[in-house]
Length: 311
Image (cartoon, rainbow, N blue to C red):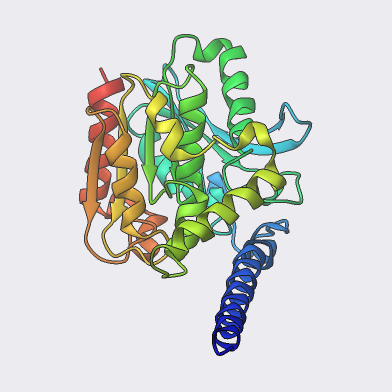
């Protein structure tokens, strides 16, 4: 007679624990749409933009159409007989890619052409949703197709250079497009689900569960066919093409663990550079607009390009 109440108590405890577990899973499943909506459901209009003329550069404004029907705007800086042409990509919200005109000037002085691409849902480019790198490779594809169709760039190597989400997109585009000859990626995340959970600061096993729910949500939002379009996957398609991965050790936006994951799966020839401090843009403050003022940074970038594409 006494065993029944005891058994009933165990069942109640199990039911309560199961209810708590289910509630916890519901909460974890709700986090990605609640947080990501504020991040991606917008068109970024920049407060600060720059022009090539401010840097003494002649520029051509390009309007290109992506394979999924969006018009994206880019700015071309041409140089006669270029050693290579560099496609610049910026981050998820800031800055405008026009902040790279200082980089374009630095490269122009050393014989490199540039195209600064404002990705979808940014600036003058069309789009109402930021795709976190899952779809922005289509924007890069439009630029690559434009370059390949331009007689001035016949047999000219193409390299992609991006920072933050732009760095991740640069890796994705390079992995997906054999026409791209080189890669420079700054502060890239290894995958969106990983950086999302990294910034939550939760430990295992909750982190694994949360990553699963983020992957489910991004697959729903960006499509089944794009589920493998992540830097961690696409860097493995690099082959023998040159690449430079750069990160700062105390990056508070894209934690250093992302860099370590990428390096762990990248081909052995990939070059790396780690800066100390919390330098998400790698170059401090106003120096990003005048990159030649950061001598070490300028030497790293120009040295990599000269090594693989210079005369």
